[in-house]
Structures are given as structure tokens and as C-alpha cells.
Image (cartoon, rainbow, N blue to C red; front, side, top):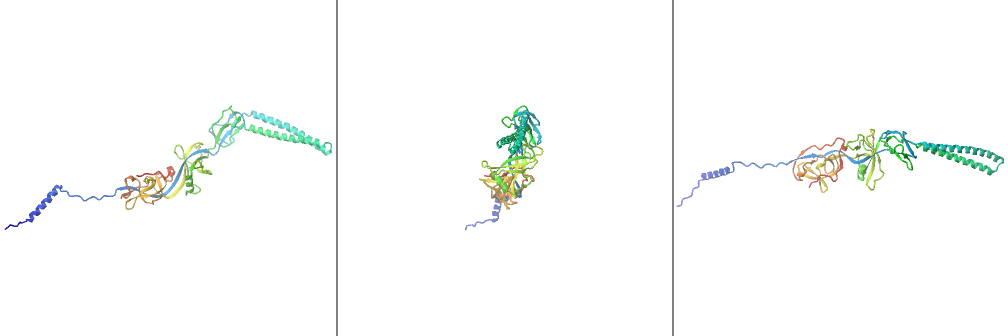
Length: 402
């Protein structure tokens, strides 16, 4: 008989155990750690904030005098005296120039002599007229004889009136030899030196006087800016400190302006409207001809939603932001923009207060990503002085993505 094979199970189990130990030794004897959980990356966000935002228009303006008068010679003659110091203040009625008066004094004397002569002839003609009028009434002289004396009397009356006019004209011409200041103001340099002939065939310019307090600043606004201002929320009477002047050194003038005049019509060639404002000038710092920047409060956006402008994306003209939802998901949110002040832009539509917006590192994220928002403070603007920063209409110039 064949012998049956006998399996020894304890030996088999020991063999399997030894194999497992050998395999564990070959693997270094280390146990594999469980896979780590991936955390959402942290991103800095700002909350959309509600605040009043002023819209300041900025324009180039030129300063001019309220009144500016050219002092000219009205009679011909040699300039004899100059009675002022150039560049200083003069008062209305101050004597400025004297033109040699002697020729005009002689003309006045001649006119006075002619007047006296004609007055004497008129006196004689009056006596003859009175005498022959009585003789006519008595029938001693004829009507034709009387009318001859009446004509003489009427003629000399006319000659006396003419002589009076000549005397008055001579006095006026003599008066023009002394030239007085017509206004209070600052007088410029003399345009003619002493001894020169002036007023010959023209009214020679002698000097110019300009008022200095207040002064005008004239500038032009586009038609769209004008419409925006008229539709703004400021009302017909702008608030105090709504017109500022920035001088050539970049400093703000310490006086506020007020509207003086708005032109009657839009210039059809330039599409602009002329505006003139007035500024006090007690120190005389402002002079005609100077240029400066005019900043005018055009509108005030009440309780506007604002975010930093660096958070705006512009893809082929479409404006949007990266909005972080409550679940931490990034969403591309379309927005409509208003104006920008000091790095903050007004959001007309698309966001509400406290919405979380990514403003830094927007090129590293994409819609659909999940992030852990880290709220940072909104950039602050200077208190009640947004006019100190640039104001622009946010229509084209925004950050581009893609």
C-alpha cells in the first residue's frame, strides 16, 4: 500500500510568519503615514465699504485781473513827467503822467480871446437890435432894415456859442495833458520814457493798471463734465471750500474760490464751456497771467460702495472683481465702476457692503478656487480732503488680466 502524505500545519504557519518578517525587514521596518489633508491657501481680502465719496474735477486755469486798464495818451505832445513808481500800488485819481501843457495852454488862450471878441460883437448887435425894434414899432424904419439887424444879432449869438465850445474843448485838451489813475491797483512798467513824443496819430500806451484783490481764474470744462456737475447732488449752491487752487509749486492756495461766471454757450469748435471763478488775494500772491490747477467739487456720491482700484480686473473692457464667497470659493463678479479717488474706486453696481474682494495676488488665483480669506483694512483716504488726491473717471484705465 502506498503511504499517505502527512502535512504539518504548525511548520507551515511558522514559514509564513518568517516570510512576513523578511518582507518587513526589506521595507526598512517603517510604517507608512496616512495621507495629509490639503488646506485651502490663505489670501488677503478687503471688505467693500460704504462711505461718502466726493468727485473733484481738475482743470488748468489762468489768473486775470478783475479790472485792467490801459493808460493811454489822448493828446499829442512830449512826455514831461512820470509821477509813480513802477510795480507799486496806485489809487484812483493819483497823477501818473504829465504831457507838456504849453501848446494846449496857448490854444485855450486863443479860444478865450475869440470868445471875448464875439461876446463884444454880440453886445453891439443886441443894442442895435433893441434900438431898431423900437424904431420899427414907431414906423421910422422899414421891416427890411430891421430884419438886417435881427440877422446880425442871431449870427453873433451863434458865434458866441461856437466860441464857448472852442474854449471848453481847449480846456478838455489841456486837461488831457495830466493823466490820472482811473482805478485802484498795481501799475506796471512805463511803456514810454520821459521826453518822447506821445499821442501823435495814435493813443500811445503809457502803462497798464490792474486790480489785484480779488482776481479771476478762467478755465474750460468738457460738455460731459458740465452735464455731470448739473446732474450732481450738490444743488445750485456749491458748499464752502468746493473750489481750490493749486499753485505752480504744487501747494494749495490758502483761500477758497467762488463761481463768478459760466459762459452762455458751449464752444462748438472745442466742445468746452468757459467758466470763471473768483479768489480773494489780500496778500497779492496771485498775479495776472499765472497758471494753476483748479479743483472743483463736481459731485458727491452718498454712501457709495468703494474698494481699492488695484482689485479691478479688465478683460476686453469688461470690469470685474474676484469675490470670495462665505464658503471661501472665488467668483468672478462683474461690476460697474464710478470715479476713483486716492486709489479707491466707486462701485455703482455688482457689489454690496462687506463683500470680500481679493486685491493682492489676483494673477495667482482663478475662479472656482477655494481660499482661506484673511481680512485686511481698506486703504484710508485723507480726512475730508479728497481734493488733495487725483480724481479720475474709472472707464478705461484699470488693471488688466489675461
